[in-house]
Image 1 (tube, rainbow, N blue to C red):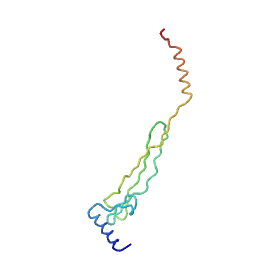
Image 2: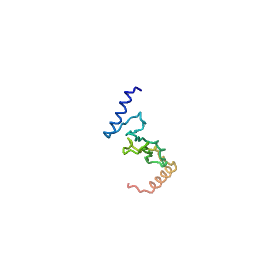
Image 3: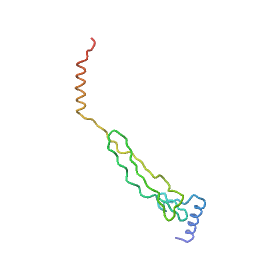
Image 4: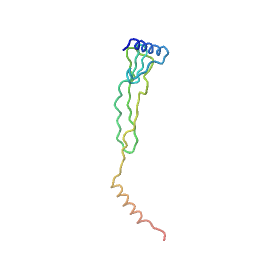
Length: 119
């Protein structure tokens, strides 16, 4: 890298810290990291998705999380982005039991035969 380009990058980083906005770049971690002088914070890996219960007929959600980790110094600036993600579990239909339908039909026949219809 050219020494002039390197000097400009160092100055830009220092100016960003002095102003208080920091320097955010995918080239410096790629996970929403923030550099402030000797402080560098970035996201750790995502956890596994939480389990879906497997109950039918419900629209459940599952979540996963990650922690903001830091380098040499504990900076007062956090990581960029959310620490939690949510998504819907695959929907499971409850379906039906064919025997329940047959029992309902039999019950309707009994009820209808016992009804006295006006003439």
